Image 1 (tube, rainbow, N blue to C red):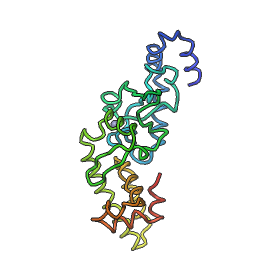
Image 2: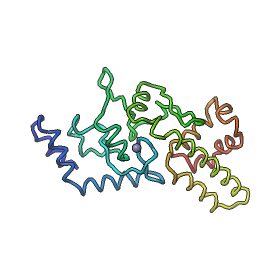
Image 3: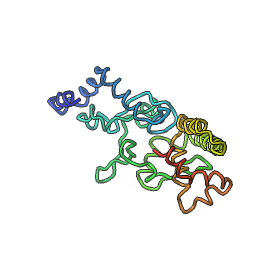
Length: 229
Ligand SMILES: [Zn+2]
């Protein structure tokens, strides 16, 4: 990877974006190994790191090649993405603020919940920061049927956690683990992570007013340890 970056560095800057793109396209072994490593890093189901819903099939350059060709082969610039996010949504977009700072959440380096709040009952994200706002807009996080998928994920998590609790009553460690895997292997992992986080927030009693039993489960240390990444 270092040698490939060096080679790009030797190309005159005006030709760099085009030739870097061609180099990425021609090194299929490198592409495949990046894709494999990113897939292995993910917990459970390997979903898109932007939308969390569809299978991550592509390697997206967080900072586009056109903008910074020298990051074409930079591990930290590679994001596992679905083709919708990679080709039709984010694509080559890379909005920045007046200081040149990125206005998209970097899923490999940042905690999305610093910028986004998920309304669990609706499956809709609200921005907490300008970066959160741009990310919602660029990736279409509140359309494409994603809120519906998140509401479904919330239901699945609720059912699995209650099953986990019943298995715990019967002291069935194998069944408890199976329920943990059920949660981890489904898409929309952001929903469970958000539930775990909101269960400890000051407004938790309101958020989970219709399911206090679920709130109690989400606050259990042993379950949190199994589910928190
Ligand atoms: Zn996606």
